[in-house]
View 1 (tube, rainbow, N blue to C red):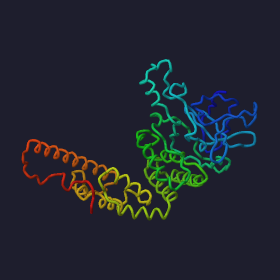
View 2: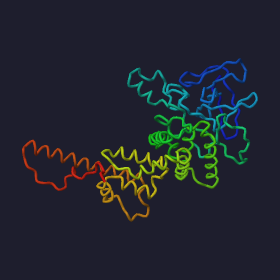
View 3: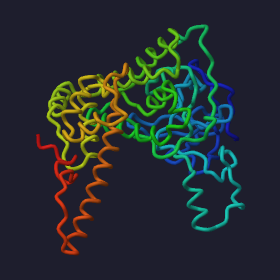
View 4: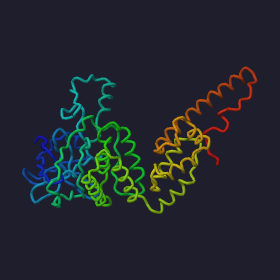
Amino acid sequence: MATQTYTTLTREPTQIFRRQQDDLPAHVTKDVYFEDQGPGHPDTGYFLDTAHGKKPIEFIQVNNSYHWVRLHRNQDTWETNLAGIYNGPEVGWWLIIDPQHPNYIQEDSIPLTLAAVTTALQQLPTHPDIPNHPTIMEGQQEDINIATGQAQAEEQRINIITPSNGALKGNPPFIFNGDRTASWKFINNFDLWRLLNKHNDTMKKPLSRVVALLSYMDGDKVDAWKEEQMRILDNANSKGIQETNEVLWDDFIERFKNAFTNQNQREESYQKLCKLKQEDSLDDFFAKFKQLAFEAGVPLNDKGTIKTLKHGMNKGLTSAIINSPNFDPTADIPWKFNQWEEQARQSYLKWKAAAEFTQRRQGLFQAFKLSPRQNNSNPGQGGFGRNNN
């Protein structure tokens, strides 16, 4: 049986015809397995073992894109909707040498060299493209609560398409199940993936970015919360908030922090944030600062957060940033956190280059047994390293 093709998926249930034979290659099925209960039997088809038991699943084509979807049984038929799309690490997808792949390369046209094989492997997507569309996904429960029948008559139909500028690169985040101790790691992993794909339409648009993150949340602890977020986004859409408005993403992340970070931990993290001081590594300082700010539920661009940042950095580095030509204290729009971080790194690199030059210069004087004139501007003294204040 060939892959079934559907024109659209919406928040309304769509009947899905399950395969009656195991005809998908192993790199597409991955951990998915086939059970044969006999021709025409409704339980014949693919399944995936999850923490909540064995779940029916099917691989379908929607327009020009392929997706694994979880299924909901309706008597002797099977249904899914937009929320049923599953991108977990247990499922695979087409290889670049498969004709169905959007960047298909004929296998006999690839020279059998190590370099060619490596290049081909680097182009393999670990998961299907996340749908890129301006409308909100329906909330989903483990069994894809499809039959609610509460969608409005004027609800938009949604075409699922492959993003016009290619598949998402790199490793997506793990599936977040609501474990508070893993919330920071989950968001950090998603941010790394987002930055790697910052020019992809899915990540450039705040709305589709939120939908992408929600597709990597699954489990009893998050299902109801996901459904609530989709209602919030739907309301924002009905109020005319554009899909490109960053407030959709900022507000969503704030709600995520409030829901999945421990309140006691938030207070402890805030106290640690206020006491944090820059030591030898600027990278470590900013990584720790952002982690504590996230755990404390403190917005990075908040005026108080920027003040805490200035006190945490080395005084010399803070002064260098304020005295840099890029900084304007009278500007109508204050600098955001990322601007402070970028200028801090630039100032630090300049100081580091000057310090290395001075060390080399002193080494030459020592090698030739010369006495250099005293240099009062030695960047090696009172530099931008450890903050002992």
